[in-house]
Amino acid sequence: MNITKLKKLSYDEVVKCNKCGFCLPSCPVYLVEKKESASPRGRNAITRAVIEGRLDMSHDTERAIFSCLGCGACKQVCLSSVETKDLIFRDRECQVGEGLYPKIADRVVAFLKEEHNITDDDNEERGEWQDLIKDLPERAFEKARAEVIFFVGCVASFFPMAQNIPVNMSRIMLSAGVDFSILGGEEWCCGFPLIGAGMPNEMGELKEHNMEKVEEVGAKTVVFTCPSCYHTWKHLYELNDVNLYHSSQFIDQLIKDGRLKLKKKNAVTVTYHDPCDLGRNTGVFDEPRNVLRAIPGLTLVELPLNRQLSMCCGGGGNVEMVNPELSAAIAQMKIDEIRSTGADMVVSACQQCLRTIATRARKQKIDLAVKDLTELVAEAME
Ligand code: SF4
Ligand code: SF4
Image (cartoon, rainbow, N blue to C red; front, top):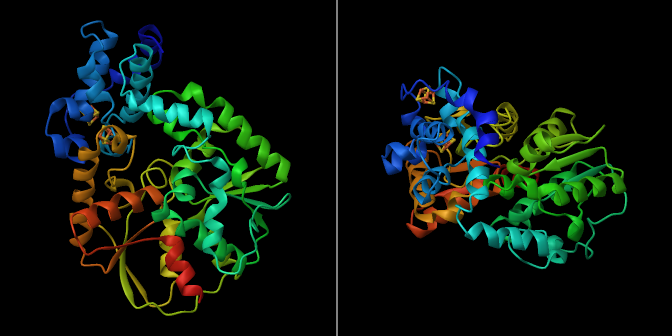
């Protein structure tokens, strides 16, 4: 994108920012960095100055524009409803157009081109997590036809720390008698990392391939345990007559339909972290809470910042990739907030939240139980 196009797409929006600063305390990046250029207001000022020709794009603007988590918390408190996140993501496209962007993104683009996943693993190994299920015949979930496709996502497919999520989701669907399939090596990254990298135009091939595979399997429903995959499909994929659900919505419905019985009492107090792309950015707040409340013996206590006001875990917007220290500092704020509730554990519904929070806790030797919603549900089925 060039500055002329940026002006066309962003100017009317960015001039809505009246510089009041109400958004500053809601921005996790600003809370850590304490610099105007790291705040939503500062980034809007940068966007406006670039469009008006008062500021050139540079490595300084690169730092400011690529340190946003894309969490959307700023818009939530903004009386002018400025779409700061969208403005910043368009700025990223412009920075890429000028060649001013974190070059680590080029590696991810190359991985996506060669292997169609973010980790550069052999994509044929996407379904390897099935080996974690005892006595399951090899590749049992990779079927030619099914009513439902479970789109696993790169992180849960390849990061051992998150592989329990597809294992548990599969056990839940098996228990409820859902006719589902995974795409295995034919599942390609949904393209979300390219949006955060300012390269959304590169995601066409990934998108087309995934849509084609859903059609081939004949599924009328796609289920996601990853909020960012779900968000990307929901907002950027063009599918006719196919229903998309996040796992929390799907499980909530299975419970309501009486297809899933949660029996085992679990006397535990949990707090729930709303993932940004599931909650604020897609509007799914009640279903994960419904599921938690359906677990016998479980008590839910809310985080001080919950639902629309939830604070990002630090894992959004590719910040973990370009500035791991910043991401870790935000994860620490999240952990402090979690501990203030006195809950026995934090539950989320996102593999990236799980990874970010659990990794920080482990590195700091903080005794904190972090689980995905699917794990608690699977435990309660036993
Ligand atoms: S983005 Fe909204 S809340 Fe933040 S300074 Fe601008 S007008 Fe105020
Ligand atoms: S989207 Fe999140 S990280 Fe980015 S400016 Fe807004 S509050 Fe800050």
